[in-house]
Amino acid sequence: MEEQAAKKVERDDKIWTKDFVLIFMANFFVFLGFQMTLPTIPLFVKELGGNDQLIGIVVGIFTFSALLLRPYAGHALESRGRGFVYLTGLSIFVVSIGAYAFIGSIILLFVIRFVQGAGWGFSTTAGGTIATDLIPPKRRGEGMGYFGLSGNMALAFGPALGLSLAGVISFSKLFLICAGLGLIAFLLASQIKYRKVEKLPDKTTTVKFDIFEKTALQPSMLLFFITVTFGGIATYLPLYAIEKNIHGIEFYFLVYAIFLIISRTFAGRIYDLRGHIYVFLPGALLIFIAMILLSWLPNMGVMLIAAALYGLGFGSVQPALQAWSVEKAPSNRKGMANATFFSFFDLGIGVGAMTFGQLAFLFGYGSIYATAAGSVFLSMLLYIYLLFRTRRRQI
Image (tube, rainbow, N blue to C red; front, side, top):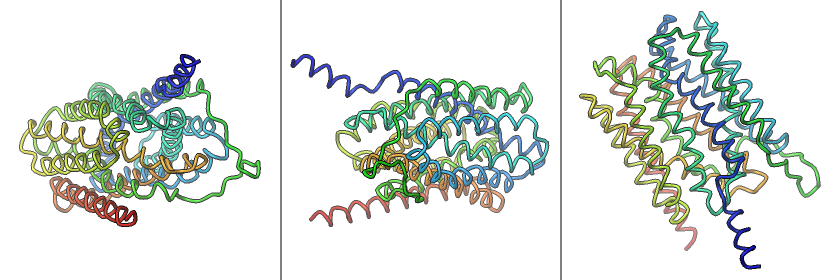
């Protein structure tokens, strides 16, 4: 009996189940397709005749579209089911990325970017929620760290692969390849056994619609100030490196992804054992230093050091904040908690990209990363304030 009980506990605490592997792989392929477009879209905008301000708007339209749709995605996850939202989002993502291949004007690009943002908002909100369903609660920080590896692995190859392909094939062929990767994600996702929609105490599946989950607000606000930096790196670093006559920008993304993966192997476990206090401030400090180095950026060596520090910092902070976002949410509000988390993620990237577009136009690319460092510093101050406020209430 004791042996059977031990085996049941082991099964209940297992992370790498068949469905978890499927969501891991689906997330990898959709992120790979997305990451391949991340550094190439600015180049595509330049080819269409756009400038830095238009690049910021193109990125902003995408992220704000995802932001607007995430509350609906969170609501649908609890009322329509995980599979419906995830597969719908992946379908929209595939069609919109494929449509890039036939775009010949910036106006059309704006429209398709808005549509792609909707697909991205649905698919990423659902993906994180599905992973949360599948991970044992006692190992949530560790499990979310492993799940995040799928996106990190895509990041290790996606930007470099996208930039390399953009140098030898047309943008049209590149975008069709990215759409094909999204299609692979859809096929994998169709094999997952999704958790059924929970019935509420009145035996219905009617879920009240709102725009956020209050238990997720604190970590989500911290995330906003962190992901402002992400908008500056993903959107403008390739152009900044060209201006600085630094070659091999793809190695920045590779080094960043390698150290991001390294951090995922231990940061989530530290969160589970010791809490976010041992993860957030050290990780945010590393990101702060990385932004200072990028604002300076004298050579490729400094760029790669910044990549390593940013990878360690962001790889520690992001899964910890996501686990924190969902851990206190009611079981029928996990989807909305993830929607809240990713809404602030999108908001940070969108605000960063659009603000930094203006900064780059007026003051040059270096001002982007000095401003981003200030945003990280604000997140650290906010965390300390929230920490002291919580402890004061416990006394």
